Image 1 (cartoon, protein in one colour):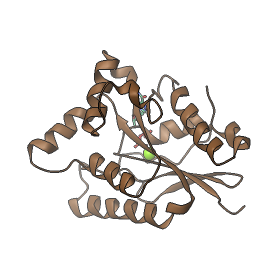
Image 2 (cartoon, rainbow, N blue to C red):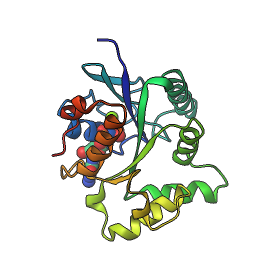
Image 3 (spheres, rainbow, N blue to C red):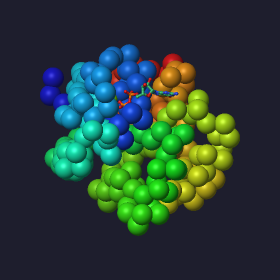
Image 4 (cartoon, rainbow, N blue to C red):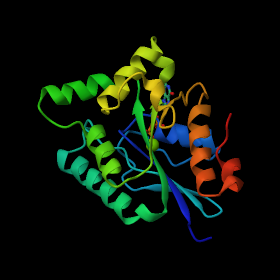
Length: 201
Ligand SMILES: Nc1nc2c(ncn2[C@@H]2O[C@H](COP(=O)(O)OP(=O)(O)O)[C@@H](O)[C@H]2O)c(=O)[nH]1
Ligand SMILES: [Mg+2]
């Protein structure tokens, strides 16, 4: 069937993009044996809905800088090329490591790649959901989520952003907040019939 709507998942390597897609849809996306192996977008389709697992970006051990740059370019081009059919972008972060990584980049005077991508999505007027994954590793969850939204230039408390921030744990199977937001986006385009492909549990 011709693709009408698309949901994309973007994020650094190893943040849990593929695990989240598996939890939400029940379908496996091909996962590389080591991070950085998937360099092309991987798709799953349900009727005319496409779910896309974009290659992980960021520095990777053993992957030359030029390769990570080309992955970033490929992601940007993919999003630009398919902009019109993308209902929403899920930007996945590892909640337990995100702030530290962002701060390290900022201390070096560089724009962290996650922030750069988020700004790019905002500039495109893309409906973006931040999925804070690996919440099972986080002790003080409200504090951590406040810290995370602040890095994205969103004013804490994070609960002000419940329509775009979803704390989840793919590992624990705790993904209902993200499923609810995705269903809301599908509802907005009149596609309640696709809810069954985005499971609440
Ligand atoms: N603790 C924890 N680990 C997770 C979670 N989600 C994924 N992982 C682990 O993180 C690693 C990378 O997951 P994967 O889905 O392949 O990440 P991707 O590279 O972003 O697609 C795997 O070892 C997963 O088991 C989570 O919610 N909590
Ligand atoms: Mg993956």
